[in-house]
Structure formats: C-alpha cells, structure tokens
Length: 276
Length: 207
Image 1 (tube, each protein chain N blue to C red):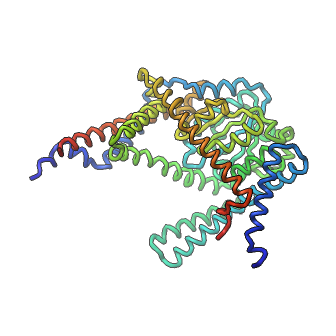
Image 2 (image 1 turned 120 degrees about the vertical axis):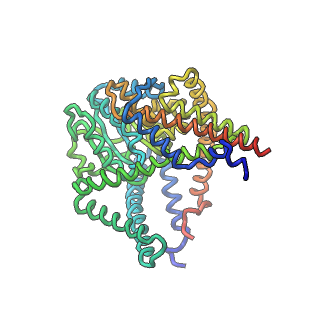
Image 3 (image 1 turned 90 degrees about the horizontal axis):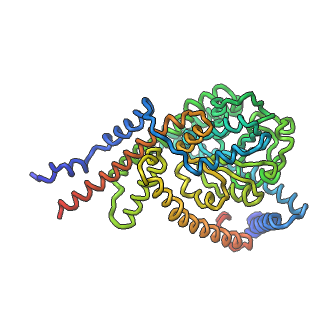
C-alpha cells in the first residue's frame, strides 16, 4: 500500500472543492447575519471624493454617468445611494445618463432607496436614459446635450424639463461622477481633457489599479472603490447603509482567500519535498 | 465592380469623418463643428441600430440551433422565449410596465449578480489549487495580491503597517506600470488612427 496517500498533505491536496465552497459560504454569511463591527478606516481617495462633492455650492449641476451592468450593480449600489443622498441633501441638480442598457432601470430602483428630501423630478434631477455608442455618445452628449437627447427615460421632451433649460453642453456641469465597471479613459478624454470638468469615479474594486494613474495625475479628483468605498462614503455622510453592513463579509471573504492561497502553497511545497 | 462594393468609398467616408473630428478638436470653425456634431449623432443612432442588429443575429443563431436540434438546443429555446417575452413586454408595456419591472427585478437583477457571486467560490478553490509560488515573479504576485486584498477589505486597516505597504504597492509600482501601459496604448492608438485616416488600415472593412 502506498503510504504517501495517508499523509495529511496528500489528503489536504485532494480536498473536495465543495468543502472550500462551504467555507466561503460560511465566511460570507456569518458577518451578514451578525455583523462583526470591524472598524472601517476612511481611505484618502474616498475622503477626497467626499470633500470635493461637499465643497460644491448649492445649485451646482452634476452629471451622474452610469456604466455598470446588472451583475456588478450590487458592488456600486451602496456608493450610488450614498452619493445621491449627499447630492440631494445639498440641493444640487443631478442629471443621470447611462451608457449601458441596464442602468436606467437599475438607477430607478436605486432611487427608491434614496431620501430625496422633497426634491422634484424634472426640476432637481432627471434620468435621461440609455444612449448607445459609448465614447461616440459621450462626445455627442458633451458637445451638444440637446442634439443627442430628445426625451428623458419617461419619454418627456427635455424642453419641458426645467432642469435641462440651462444645460446645453458638458461646460454647464460643475462635476461629473462616473459610476463604472469599465474603463474610465473614454470619459476622461471626452469630459476632463476636452472641457476641463472635474470628475469623481465610483468604480468596482477591480478597476482601482487601472484608475490610479488618473487619480495621481489629478484627472479624477477622488475615487470611491466598490463596497468598501460605498461604506466609507456612507460613514462620511453619517448614513450607514447596506455598504457598512456588508464590509465585514468582504473582510472575512478576503481573509479566507489569503488563508487558502498560503495553505495551498504550504501543502504543495511539503508534497514537493516529500517526493524528493 | 459595382460602385457599392468598392472599398474606396468607405475609406473616403472614414477619412472625411475622422479628419473633421480632428480639425474640430483643435480649431473653432462653426461649419466643421456643425457637421461633426451631426456625424456624432448619426454614430449614436447607428450604435443603437447595431444593438438591434445584434439581438436579431442572436435570435437567428439560436433559432437555427433549435430547428436543427443541436446539442443543448433547449437552452437556446429558453433564451429565445425569455428574449421574446422581454421584448414584447418592453415594447408594448414600456420599461415602466409592472411585468417588465417584475421580470427585471426578480429574474434579471438576481441572476446577473448571482453569476458574478459564484466567482467568489471559484476564486476560493483556485486560490487553494492554482496560485503556486514557482518563481520569484509569482511570489511577488502573491504578496501583492495579499496586500491589495487586505487594502480592499476593512480588516487590512487594523493590521499595523499593512495599509502603508499596500498603498505604496498601489501608488508606486502599480501606477508606474499602468502609466507605461496607458502611454503604450495611446501611442499605438495614434499610430492606428493615422493609418486609418490615411486609408492604410482596412481591418474594419468586410472581406
């Protein structure tokens, strides 16, 4: 009988994947059912985003551009709720536009979770819906808003919406907030480089390394990454929500990934030594 | 050869549109601005048409799979059923219709994140089985991955020193590498654009 088969390292190496799945399930579930209350330090990038938005005077106009498909929406939704709450609390006009087909419906659902503080549709905020063409649509919108957009998401001609009367091009916005799960470069080219409009990015965590050059160069003034960023923004506006309650699950999930990576290597190395 | 099949025509249209955009970016000429605004609006309309074309193509491919009873044809039939249902509800009831809302909120909005959520489980299994330190480079990759995971999760903030080191990794080597990639792709894009404008690049044309 081959004795190596009974070694703990051999048994561990053949660990059933379902045990790993179960461990991950438990690591994610426990903190959601019973939050651990781990401290959440505020990162510089989120603080910069918050401070920039907070410094906008009342009556400023902000473009909230969305490009996040339905699958990744839960990652950016806490941040989107927090930023919309912040904007509505400061009496800032919000124009929402989507570069993907899912987002107009997703943002409508998200808006039901936001305290609008009596703000009126068409006067204080508007959902312009989806425009196909990505960078071409961005360029067309930035150059001539009324040329591209004829009706809002509800089919109302934009001439009938008071908020749109003074918005003719990108130059009329004080800030662009890009809520994205894709590359930020097209928006940088069409809004920041072409018109000098400041931009804040709300993104999924996977895009953070790619967006860092734009943040360090000052082309984006702040960045709110994923659920953690959303949770930080919730704390900054003093309205803890779904982001704050799910960050513990994020912590335990990542800790499990780290433990598994190290454990997998230890087992692999001990088997390698055993074979010699 | 028919005038409609000649490759020169699309090349001329591309070059004309491209040069207009370049001129408009650097100079303020009202006529050029007006024409280029029109071209951008057409481009957005064409993109919207392309979405419909893509959906039609998808429908044709899957209808053919069902008709010829190819492997897993019932999945294609299900796709067609859901696609047609959403299109009918979306067009005749609009996207504000309660049935569309119901399907979007209870089917689409739950299935999409579930697909992404499954990645957490596959990642866990892959971390255990595949992330092997076979070289110095893979060791650096593993250390960077651990640091950035700790930076992305609140728990990293309570381990002394982790935030400082992870921030350095993110801000210095990562940003330097990303800048190199960005500059490389930008220079490549300039080269490709010049070739396209001058008609040398014809990869976008049909065979």
